[in-house]
Length: 255
Image (cartoon, rainbow, N blue to C red; front, side):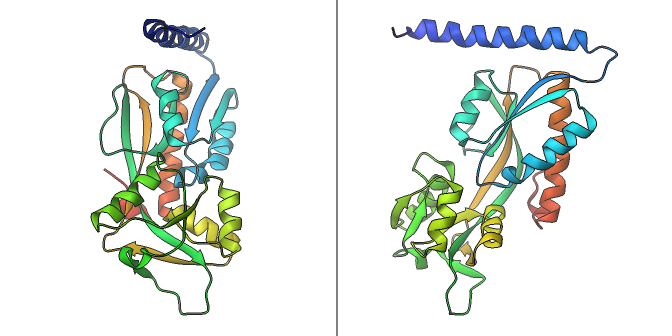
């Protein structure tokens, strides 16, 4: 059986209504008590958001032990759809250049992209021009991934096309491939430095043109957050600000 378009719309509305009923019941039951209930948060892999998972768990457990936190580390497109459909409270993910109906984005920072290559005997460069990567074997995610879109658009601005030899979206597999010398990759600064801490790599910031990936907090633009979800959101913003300072990215935090 395949639902009609009208049936799919009705199903989405039914999910939203059920979620609002659950939130209303939870908010009424929580009056005069410590915050409790379920809160779902998406964290896009391969971004500064990934490093928030453990600190977020610790902070929520310490401040609001009755909140049941669900963390979903999936790809950005799926996360935004879950938020749009009312099946997830919020997500930290790459923001596109155009708005999406049903969603609101709060820009958190813009991370510069770095070339991550196997360690070589030559003196490492702090920066590398994008044109120098024209014939470099690259390991990148699939074209629908926002990170890949930023890379493809930057190459296209120079009338070039990246030489992609494999498409990898698993962080573990990508790290192993770089360590084995099978190619280089392009990652946001935070993810690049995490990889450099686990294997021997050379990091070069990409310039001419520089590429930046905007990271944002995504929410529904019409469904209000429950009290527990608002509390978790406040913790996310607090932890994210501290993380960007620790990474030296505080100058790129959006107003």
